[in-house]
Length: 443
Image 1 (cartoon, rainbow, N blue to C red):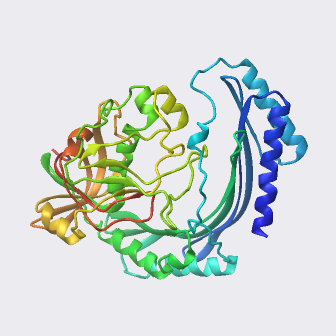
Image 2: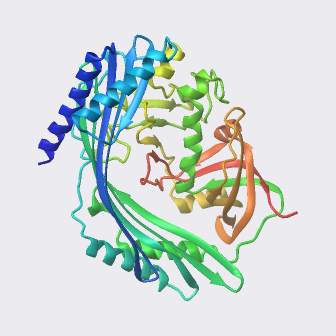
Image 3: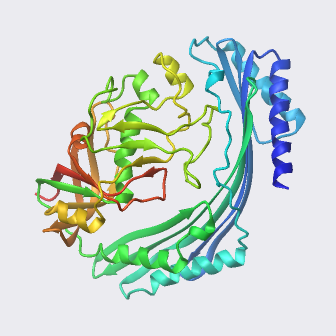
């Protein structure tokens, strides 16, 4: 059944590419996605929402030489396909030429398509999803008397097929699934009210954390934030917890991405082959990781992905480029249209407790707020919540503070990367200790 559906969708893409050629396009590419799933939210012990979704979308880009046009539709009928191609062609005929536009280099397109074990549909009924969501929330609400309210627990399952094709002969489909469970609750003690959450996500539902465990973690994380204080202005070491540390490397990826580079809007301009991290830092992509949340044999243009180092020995080895940005820079695509895939930061071997000991006296960051990163200069300023640590032991929660620094210096001042790696996202890192940052709180 699944194979028949894939063949049908691939045929739709081929029809579209043939239609683009018939309408005079010199080249074309098209993508088609079909997704369906279920999401159930329970709040205060009762069902709040039940959502079944079934979506489809088709997008086409055509080229008339160096002129480009794009259009999309949700209607997959032959008449709609013809109209969508016609709309894209009309746009392309009136756009300006761009010498860097066009399909990927044919020699960079993927030719190997291993099974990365990304498709595990979950036969989850609404009744079972409701049961799980209520169990998850109840385990949080009943964990402690100070848990005063709830924002609910949500169970979601998703599966989909994505087909990509172009007029160079590339035509491939991939199936994937993604399932999740999240719970968020509030705690109150006197006038102090705090909120926190926990979640689990996996390609295969068998690897999700138990619903009750997700609820308990949400409750524990919320309770530990009660009694938060501010801090007087100071400079001190800062430890980013694993789930927060990924944002640091997200900023790093943005700084070495093609768009930032050709616009010259990055603090890491011309940083290739220079040392930007300590020598022990190793950052690499693992796009072919079996079952990985970011795994793919090819990027969103069909260019083959590959295991590669971005940073080795602290030195920047490569950029993150799509076809267009690579051409703007006089380089080749790195297979990163759509971003990095399973970006991994090698730990230095310390578990979280050891990282606290290494921190000594300083700030543990568990939440970041705001968008205070200036990519042009690397200046970094974020609202923060977390815990004050003395002699490697957490003393009390802190809130209403800001941490500040410059990413260029922060990267160089990384002291250690923990082995408490958070595997729930596309950036796989443990906690990160930075030697010194500025803290602003109460005067």
